[in-house]
Image 1 (cartoon, helix red, strand yellow):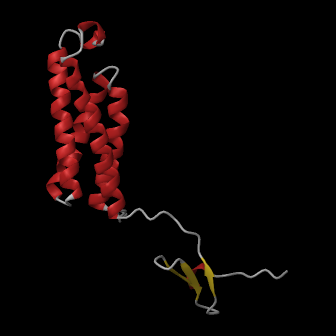
Image 2 (cartoon, rainbow, N blue to C red; image 1 turned 60 degrees about the vertical axis):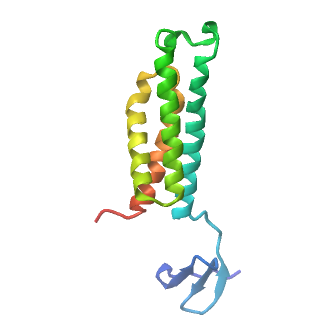
Image 3 (cartoon, helix red, strand yellow; image 1 turned 90 degrees about the horizontal axis):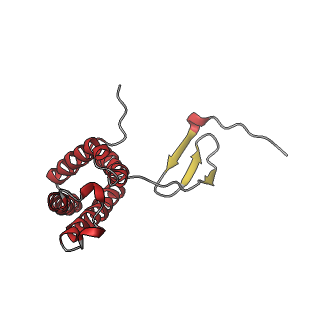
Length: 154
């Protein structure tokens, strides 16, 4: 068995074809496929999570028709207010997802702002903030990565 040392500086990788080429010997060998997180990936991820989160928040409007004994005790005093706030946030998240799919920068900024407000306010809304925080953090990460990319600060 022969061991061969390959200088990493002599290898060129072609991500599209999935082949690495050794420039010193001209030999090619298959490369492992990796998940490419490019802009369409972040658009789909952020808009998908926004639609799911918005749809869940639209369910808050059901508190207006539920019998009072089914409304959580923590929201029983202001259930009309919280159901309307949930409905408004749900619609805003779905609108933001739509504009992100259309690749509009205002949708990206709007999604970032919605996520920042939600991440900041989620710990104060018990017990529902436990669901809002991770969903908004995922959207915030995806949208910031979509906007700035994987650039390093020099």
